[in-house]
Image (cartoon, rainbow, N blue to C red; front, side):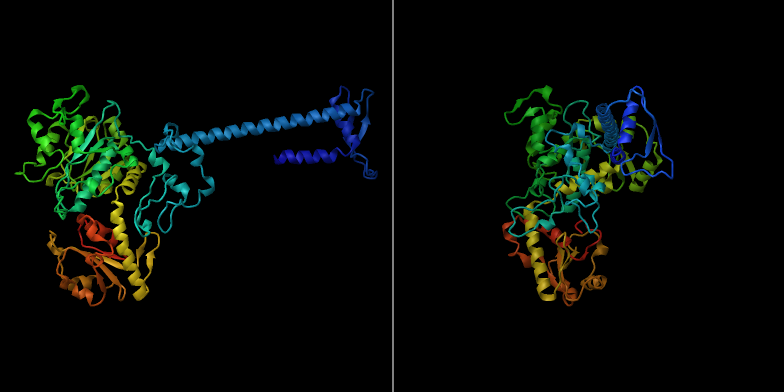
Length: 567
């Protein structure tokens, strides 16, 4: 374009000379004049003279009208040639960009071509003006720019609803997830049979956070394998029996597992729904169902027991509704992996799955060794992929998975692993009512700290600070070396606290005199100090530990008990 403009300006200057017009026009005729540049230094041209001199002009010289027409045609031809060149180069550029985009997206398993019709149009993905700015959903003191966080495109920060005070700073999740995550499809899911496949499991027998961690592993495994997750029947959970009217609980009492977005990635059903659909017997009408439509039949010797426990069960062998009646059925008809969280790590690798042999890439193998440490790697293979039902015996000591999912399950493609971290972050969080109660306590602590001593929030983004927190585990803790005195707690932590700082203590110690060594130096607060503020009497009493974990997580500094899973 610059060259074209320069040429146009030059032509306009030259065209001021009538002689030059004649010379140019005559070259378009059959017999034109011969021209050359005037070189005489002594003969100066007049204002209207040409810088060229005509040496000879034949009698067939074109008239002025012909010359003007010829010049017009030449300029039009020049313009068409210029446009054609630019259209051609633009086409080549777009082709290269499109090819590069396809390579990039296919490498990360994100195919725009196969997105659902409900997905936003493509132009919404191309936000070049904001590439160097952090996405509004980005978090942390130094969030990365959008060009380095493509999974955030389309995401929005989550909200906590139906709370009388602003609690949204406590929402660490995104809702909705980004466009890439909405349309993610696991490369390990099998679609060859076209039939639904299932994953079943047993709740861990430990405290709530052991149960929660084990359950999160099951969600990730089911989602990665492309399976429907079957929840265990509601049952009394260890240390969550505070509601005498309803002692049997399930995961849906604490998490919203039925959201459309979560169900898209991992369908979740109850044990009762599974038995009715796949058990081979319609337990409502007590008539045999169509066997062709059911994959997993309850064997005759299990039918009576399975019917008794598919909705509620207990972990007591002598109970009429012993959970083992259902779990034994799962073990008989399903595939049972032999894995233990402390002895094994679970590996998802596309090459080893498709080729049924070891991974040739040494760097990938080295990363697996680094991840697993002394643990033996268990690879997701064809046998597991083809099984209609996979059952994890996670309530038994020899099969417990007492790990965070990101330290037990390893994806050799880090982009896939990051997706499942976001899946748990964005969907497996407590009900809003738990965060609302916790927010009321945090607000009261921060208000008191500011009014008395001028302490302010140190975490503006996450709504934390203004007080500090501790978890002092005492009651049923099996690690005897961790049961230290109040004096030791003070000596071990005094360098962390500020003078007169408010310390929120979550504990199972009932005797408040235990905390006197700390109370001499700091203002101590406990959950029961906020019974009225948080409206605890109106809430499920089993929520209390979860509320405390949220409150403690927002302290300026948190000191916990090693190795308590609550801490």
